[in-house]
Image 1 (cartoon, helix red, strand yellow):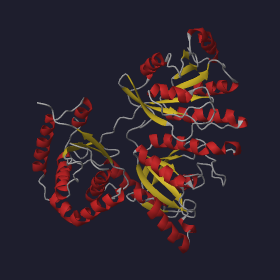
Image 2 (spheres, rainbow, N blue to C red):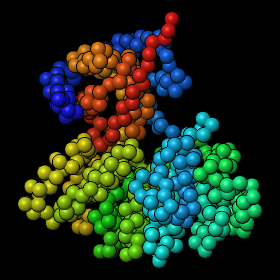
Image 3 (cartoon, rainbow, N blue to C red):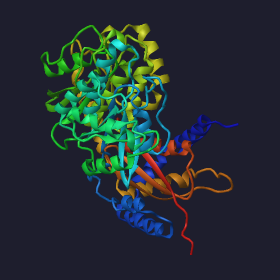
Image 4 (spheres, rainbow, N blue to C red):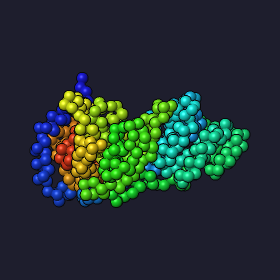
Length: 509
């Protein structure tokens, strides 16, 4: 029985055999000829069933390698509120599917917080703020911290209140914060299951957030009207994500608590800009700083999550991941700091995976290198091979944030990662690459059929996003093979590569 790994190895072997010859053949391809062939392949697609999205992608086809195009950032709706007011039930109702865990116990929402939703052909990201602390002493601080983080992340806030309980002191605390934030806020009066309970919702006018929207998340009552109202103020493209284009390149400094993020920012800035403390989690808010490094100006974002309290320890990872997400939305490249004196942890890998999910460029900075002895170095190399194999393409820099040793080496690594992130392969070249690749190593026959690649194009840069129109699903191993060969031929050091498939059938004549 073959496994994914076996298949990957087969593709890897094939890649090694033809690696040099593929690069040579592509170097010999005439650009005008490649352009004409790609145009012919594009015309051939008209024989297949294509939808509006397909034509949108095909409209972006260009031969200009400098044509940088972002995929639009979806607008973000954040749902905040006290425990057990029905936030997760409302998430499920808006999504039209059961995604978020719903229980009568406060605090069941934990790890997964972002979902993709759609209403009346408008797509958006929904953030369900969970991670509540069951410890009553910490609940007020926890709710307030949640709301604060969610506001950083979103374009519109849904503040959910249990209409049957009414406004509590915790709700009033969150309201004060929402008023200061300046984001559009919808006050959602949940658990109004029929018209007899509507006066309970009306009582929430007193919160000063405008008209309450009575809904029943469980039964769906009033949710469609709420969504219609939200769509009137929700931007088409998020104002939070990618809020600046141009200017200094934006760098998020990420890592688990006490790994040296603030020290790195201070050394880079040449002064004490951020509080540095042995206590993990002393940074509360992301700090944006203009920093000159390597003769260039950069904007660094230091993000260390939320201040850790003893009775909030369980939720600390949750807050940290939300803060990390907020920083990544505003960044172009992430420097993930790893403490070489400690084994690479699950939390380190989770932070790197957040960067990959966000599509940002990536640099790995191995901090506290001055404290490394030979024995730990041997273990570290093994850990890197084992735990970070999926980001072997990311530039590595060995530094000491405390002493400033080798910090200047961050600059070429950042520039390399960003250059890869910006890279665009002209459509003619990309289709020549696909033709040579599939001719040298065709996709295996599956169920009596062999999937073919009809046409390919790079739909976006930042990150490099490729779309393949095919006659059948490509094996995951074959898709990874294509990504690996793209890296070998075109570089892409420090940038994730997104490879999307569109399986299309021939039109019925």
